[in-house]
Amino acid sequence: DDNFPPTFRSTGQDTRWQILTLLEANVYEKLLKINYETMQYQPQLATHWKISEDKLTYWFRINPDARWSDGREVTAEDVVASFNLLADKGHGDPNTYTLYGESFEIPLIAESKYIVRIKSKNVDWRTFIYAAASASILPSYYLNKVDGAGYVEKYQYEMLPGTGPYILDKEKTTKDNNGVIVLHKRKDYWGDKLYV
Image (tube, rainbow, N blue to C red; front, side, top):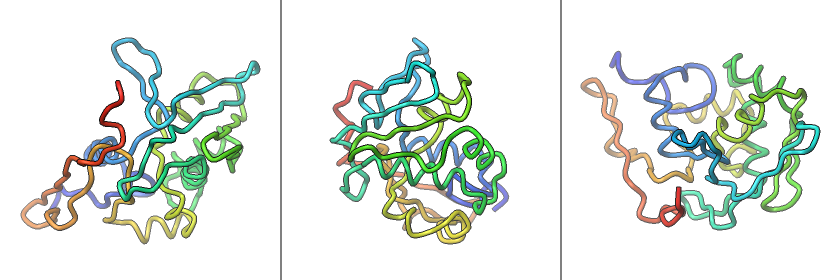
């Protein structure tokens, strides 16, 4: 039991466990990913992005083919809701809510179904990384029903639908005998044919 994480959430109190980073990376996705061989950004949930001349505003176009594991479309509203959660003090992780609350103007703006605008409060090279390649995107149709404290309480050992290639097997995952976490590769993963 000592090795089993205290939660499956990737945001909020008690989330500083390496296994949670691995779970998050397999179940959820970010707007972009960094290719560590070329050190270039590559599409993940977003197909295109643009940075304003003053380097304070970023636009991302969500891939219209992107789907949650329950089959629903990924939209700009999901990005807005995910950043709202990250900046919400109620989830109890001051490192996260301070970083996102002080770095970005919250709420973000969904300019259309697939275009989201993220406005940074300061010119800092790190804010693009935080926006594009650090924040896992979660489904708004779950997040819009809870605040940060409600998210921590409701999703302690639940994982929301993700866009990544794996899904948690709740039946085979157990805390007994030091615990086992079981993931299955999705047969319907929306990004199977993408270059990345």
